[in-house]
Image (cartoon, rainbow, N blue to C red; front, top):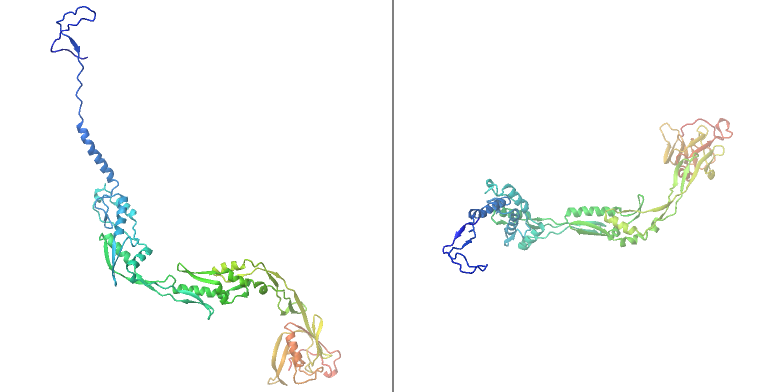
Length: 504
């Protein structure tokens, strides 16, 4: 409740009362209610003065968690007090501006890290610096510098160095491969070595200048050999492959090179080129097509029937004519393009697809019949008489053996008898076809009494007929020798039958 107060100077109210009556006691003092004076507000000056300092302290604490410790350097670049991102930017910027001065015969050439396409893993270095030396860890302040590995872009660096010190460069000449018509083979033209500045030396100098913090390094320009993009050994290897292609190039049916291709023609199909330092091979399908158009006439053929000599059991004794299957070439429309792709891949043997027709085989059963009674030899082929000749068999006492035999050997010429104890000696007996031990058909140039016994056991014939038998009767040909029908007593006239003996 408010206090009741008395005004300092009593006032007299002479006004008429609202009720119209006279005022009463005009000399009495007038009283009124006074409002309460507001209480004085409390001032918190100390609190307001303390807030800025707290904020600063908190902010500093937060920053210490993301900043690199003072005194930290990476590759000579101070990064203390920086964030990882700012430190990475500072590293790359410093590297870009680092210079290398090259003392050459023509003067000093200068290139920068930016010219050389130099890079470091700035982000990783900055992160490593923060991880090892965070600001909040005061024990890591002013620590030893961190080294960095510098890389350069070889292509950009060479371009910059050529621009700055072109006199130090001599371009290499690539080895080449070409077809030599005189030798019908591919040959190599050797490469020529070039020269240029040593990128490894330049990179090392740039790294030293950067990591030391010097910012500049001066070195003597080191000139080193520059290898050609296509070296002589590489060209030689390509020549070996190409000549291998020419050795085998052609169109094959199975393993047979049915249509060989001339080496010069094959070389005209091929293009040898340098693709980024590698020797590449391409083939022209259009050029190949001209040869493909000739294939049907060279590949297609009718079958060739076989002819063989057999014995009575049907066993082949000699092949007179080799059988050959007929064949016809399939569709040729895709051969040229397929062969071009195959040649480019290093395969020069194109396998053709053909349809084959089998051959037939004709068998000739041959045998020889010798009749001692008639002194005649008859040659049969499939039971048809081929030849029939008068012969001279063994004389009495050296009769020709009888029975069934097989030809087992051929001697074109030899001496007969002529031994130290032999009763006779005949030189240069021609065309001997043996069918029994030491007994055979042969030519007899020393007599012309054929049709009568004359020999020491062999079957004598004129020389030309002996040559015919020699060629006509292969090993295994069956020979039948029939005895005399009525041998004479005492071995006269027709030959007598006796056991086998060695002939003379």
